[in-house]
Length: 102
Image (cartoon, rainbow, N blue to C red):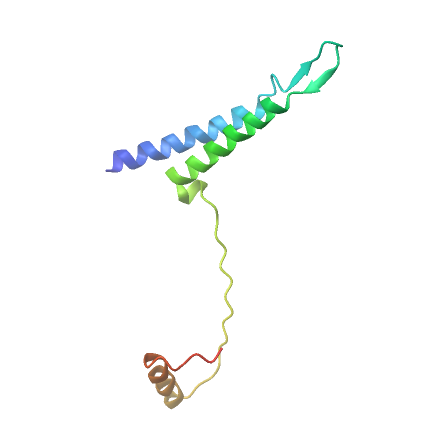
């Protein structure tokens, strides 16, 4: 199983390298029309973007810790000084499902 996991990591790394190659390759991004004017080849640019996005998505599935989206959690924590009796009371309330104050 470790060999399989390592193979998936290597595959994700290769995809990341391909992403750089695709992004750096500008050949075919500009075409010359019949009048000799240079124009952006929007189809080529869109296809390159799609190829990059597909590889990013797949790499994030193969190695989510390395290439997956980062999730940020925001929490509000209020700390108060409670007596032991208040803590015991609060524990009982929470265990009975009665403790939602906020």
